[in-house]
Image 1 (cartoon, rainbow, N blue to C red):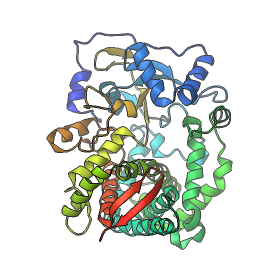
Image 2 (cartoon, one colour):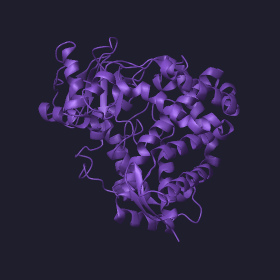
Image 3 (cartoon, helix red, strand yellow):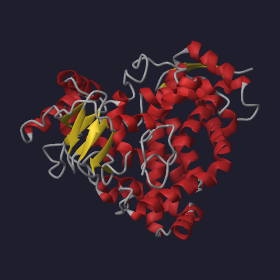
Image 4 (cartoon, rainbow, N blue to C red):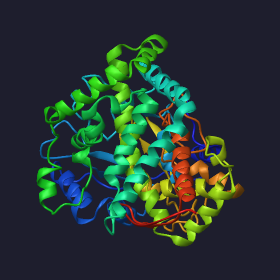
Length: 474
């Protein structure tokens, strides 16, 4: 069983709060979900969608609809109970209360063909035997790769930033999203799959783009990309996309991993009782969806936080150069508390996975800060993390980016409420919970990237998509 932090366990069993009926409504059949979908994607946008309903119902727990929905998602039920404060949200981590089967993106599950006709671990509940096998396999990969992780990170960062410098020497601005994704693809293939993209020219050149297309077709019905409305609603959010559109891309990645990652795949078969197909498709999902996809969203927001704030940059530069010794390691980065805090604060403000879901395993009573609610077995719970981690009863000035928020003793306590990884940052990922297996390595890797940049450059100016100025360190 995975429990929330002690303070939340106490709150969840409190008997002195009023029992309240869950407010909100799903509206008329079909029309209610369509109306909410248009608000979510078009008229209000996600954050405002949830904020307005908090104000309307005077509650951080309420009923609403979330996309995808009508007209062409006939087998998808958009009805959810929204959980938008840390107390209510923490119930999603209690495996005795919630079932995580097929709820990665709510009630919508992309065609299993996207994952080789195998239901990969992320869609499995902790009660399914296959879940612990695959998670153990992934945790073993991360453990075994720790010896090469930092050296591969630094060498591939060198290539990326050399390329950005070369572009800046010819132009006033250097877009870095594609170079970043190419770096991520090469780095992650090496450390997770033990596969070197340079051995396959097609993969080396376009592997990252293949993953982009594969990811996009699975997620487009549930995300907004900001194109002209109503075109986005009509063409992107109205139906699920068929796998055949990216089957060639996925088969190319599959063949590459199968040929070049044999040692890693064999460990899944021999050490964890997986079939070869199970090992390959789960490995591709963790590499492409969790790691590549997550870092592709998270790192631009982290770079923006640094490259757009010269005063913060100076403090981070001093810490990066004065602490941790001459060589960057996992241990050295732990001596840089401000850099780690900036990583945590970026994750708090802009978590790469905005929504978390769980289905009630049984009837139970759910607690928010001010009320208790009855939840029925089978109801789908939905937490929008961007608001949960701006809970004003937990975080001071919650809508402000505070770089040092997670430093010191008080900052360490706030890690109990940093939920980006499907669990508290202060908790541990285990075989019996659904917390991200790479929780620790993600934050350490991001901190290493910050330290690397501020040891390499005296000044960086840019935003979440491009760099305009780089001043190399003397």
